[in-house]
Amino acid sequence: MARAVEANFDGLVGPTHNYGGLSEGNLASARNEGLVSSPRQGVLEGLAKMKRLADSGLVQGLLPPHERPYLPLLRRAGFSGSDAAVVEAAWKTAPGLLRKACSASPMWAANAATVSPSADTADSRLHLTPANLLTTLHRSIEGEQTRRALQWAFPDAARFAVHDVLPMQPDFADEGAANHVRLCAEQGGPGVEIFVYGREAGEAWSGRFPARQTLEACQAVARSHGLDPKRTVFIRQSSEAIAAGAFHNDVVCVGTRTTLFFHELAFADREAALADIRKAAEGLFEPDFVEVPEAEVPVGDAITSYLFNSQLLEWPGEDRLVLIAPKETEETATTRAYCAAMTAGNGPIGRVEFVEVRQSMRNGGGPACLRLRVVLTDEERAAVAPQALMSDTLYDTLVAWAGKHYRDRLEPNDLADPALLRESREALDALTGILGLGGDYYPFQWG
Image 1 (cartoon, rainbow, N blue to C red):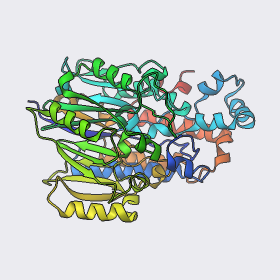
Image 2 (image 1 turned 120 degrees about the vertical axis):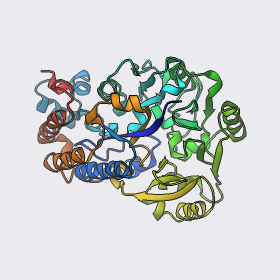
Image 3 (image 1 turned 180 degrees about the vertical axis):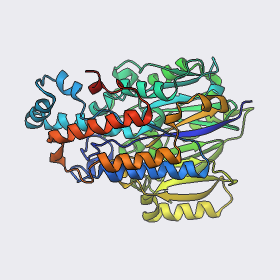
Image 4 (image 1 turned 135 degrees about the horizontal axis):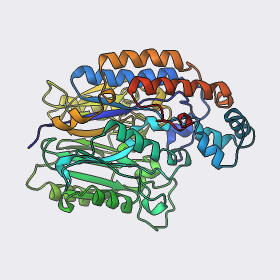
């Protein structure tokens, strides 16, 4: 068995980070629509979290922000003229569309792709399938740029397989790793891959909020990754969780190694789900289920505090797992009390560390939303693009870069400012040099 570790690749917060209220079913996004944002604070919060994990000895990577405002979307919608004229006209006649073209949502790298480590796949390569994110317009434009980002970070085709997105059709609605969990005895050994879906293709859906992931998308990813059907589990998310605002499974469930940490209402058929996981894990490991009862933490509190949208990590030098949770979890009475009682016991989670990611949280993204988990063997880690891995030097460079290029305040009306388009492009131009992305990485650089 190859030695392997679970790395985290976080999305860099982009220069147009704003509160557009674009994500149906995401309660925080809707609640904070129109607030003044701070792109600079957002990117610095994200970088600080990355630095904290890297300093601990964990493998920490990053993915670049996407080009925003995204002019190709506006031009396809019929706007023409100079880039500045396109932005101005869109703001005057279709401000909602401009807000979508400016969304910094690629910061939430948990939706970037679904990842299967080489220990699980038929060809012994690490497989990554970018999500199509077709449920919402502002996210549906991410797939191709995400694919380029993954090919930059994981360039060795002998070790890494970066797939195309699934068909852009509702039957294959795919939201990436936010609906995927892998359990295993050892990171370098075979594991059980758990796919959680909200609906099946063609199903009549009458829920309060959309069910964003289909069973068919999960099955397609599992097939293309060459997963062992005996070690692959498909579980339906509960309609109660979706109605409460769990737009992705990672809002009510997180897991690593043998531990699955989840809310009582996470799954449609809890008993069947746990039984299927136990069966898939037979001969590999005994799953350790940590279930949070509704009576102790109501699902509404779990969602507003993002207790489960946390990073569950093997921490160097510690025997038990560490949960990296947002400050909001500490500030919510029920989740604070639950965390205290959980860590005082002898269960698999021994410590909770609270981090400041409020700029992301106000748009509905906690620590887990900001990262894409990638299990890497030593050889695969050596094949990752060096500039994609966090270091002291890269951290200092990116902090200075953000200080130079990012606004401290961004009001909703600022999206119409042609200067924001120029500033964003200048920031991304500079970033291509810092990360070695090449001179034609972003569409605006194509000439």
